Length: 159
Image (cartoon, rainbow, N blue to C red):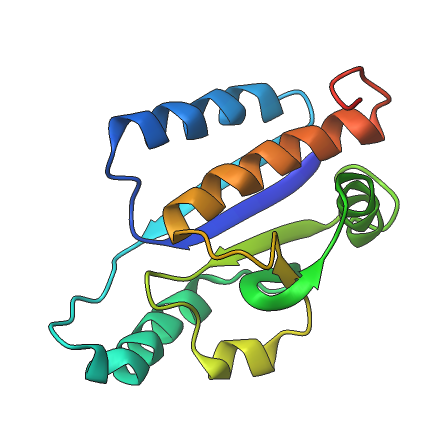
């Protein structure tokens, strides 16, 4: 069983997003111990505050990252993987086992992640060249984690 934390700025506000997220959380249970930590969004009134907002959120994120965790940042600048490649990435990140290493995925707020975080960690992950909301990224992440669990365990979810 994999040990995974999702650190996310903000909450899932709409019921339909929470329902989709929670459905995949249930499905992941045979494959991973998953903790979700929602961190407060920094409010802003102008796009001119972008860097200050991202810097404040970065401080909060960095305080919550566990030492000795393999960190993946979700960002549009990240590397894209097929589902099979993502499954292998998860497996290899846990040292070829299913539980000896802790993995953390970080999802920034509406404005994305501050450059200070991107420079601190080398594992940048992107789901697509398309832009998704940070809320949708959470759902895509848990679905792909579930899919990775099925691929690694040779289950018939992935066709």
